[in-house]
Length: 115
Image (cartoon, rainbow, N blue to C red; front, top):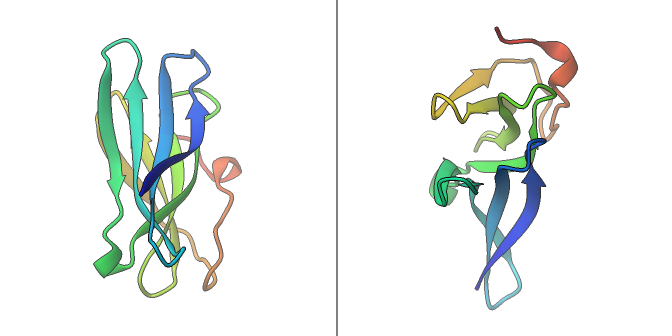
């Protein structure tokens, strides 16, 4: 069964970022992906697929203070976290390289600004 979780509205109320989670019959949960719904166009956009075979999971999506980016954390198969930014205007994501500890999901907005 798939469920929609962690809905985050943009400040202008025109977009919603959300995660889809797959719930298995044995009660395990696996993230399926991070998506954005554009209310004006009626389109769903895939921000990040979760490729479980490669150990890729997205977490804690939120909008940047200026509304230009969706920031989310990714846990890679080697248990290293990285921060990614998705730009709806460009339909492109950027990776922010930070030194992180194993199994640590960083908080990021205070660390950078993008022009």
